Image 1 (tube, rainbow, N blue to C red):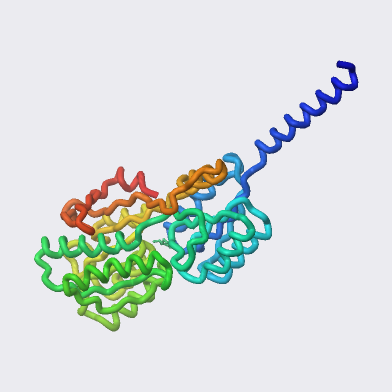
Image 2 (cartoon, rainbow, N blue to C red):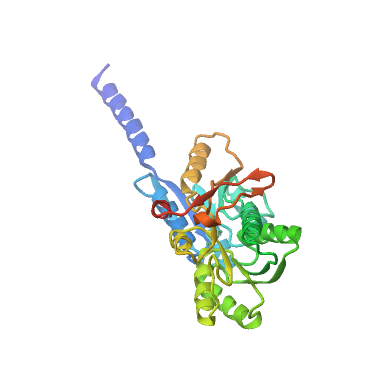
Length: 335
Ligand code: AHR
């Protein structure tokens, strides 16, 4: 081989090596349209995604906090299409109204992964990773039935502070709890939204305390932050809650502060919603990148929490449920 040919071969080989090095270093571009920052749960979900889809892990993450604004969330998704990201993650604020924008993602050839809440009016996404909200609601209801029976409480008069109206988290938890309430003939006095926030929970509970004074013995908050606000309102109104008091307080999420309130005997039972979905979303993305098939639905594992004397046996859809006793170690390990 003469020198000129050899130089050309070496230059060609170097170019190939450089291209693959550059390609190997090319980060995967991800757009994440997050619901907002309304709760402890949401903070943990955002952190989970930012930790997993970090630059060190080979990702270039565009994160948009949509502040619970449905129009802003669709705009964020469209901006990801314009940026030509490789994958789009959506945590849908509400469950409907998605088909047009998902069609646009599809036409742009960008796979969408839905996280946490569901999209109920379109299937134009590659996969969903999240919670079974109806099961959470059914579990709360069936636990209440078993607990009330064990305590000799014959009548249930419940007030519900629901989550953001039209979100699948609200729809599922309300459907599940109402199904059980109907089954046992309970009186669900009212259900008003606290928008999954502490301020919302407090405002709704203040109104409930005025409108239904002395008429309720159960308060169901659809997340811990609403429960924190509801407790402030009940404290101010002189309503006592927790085992042996005026009101049985039920909550969802089981974040660290929620479990601390279970341990303190304020929240009687807390039904977990697991926000740490990002590692499972990454698995989906890695499979899609490798051209492999993915599961369309991935359910997060979740636990139900109470103190020892509120642990009761109950079933959901014929399946015996396990409860976890809240201890300092359990709280320490929680999100
Ligand atoms: O979609 C999950 C719900 O949204 C969580 O229960 C709540 O805390 C959050 O804001």
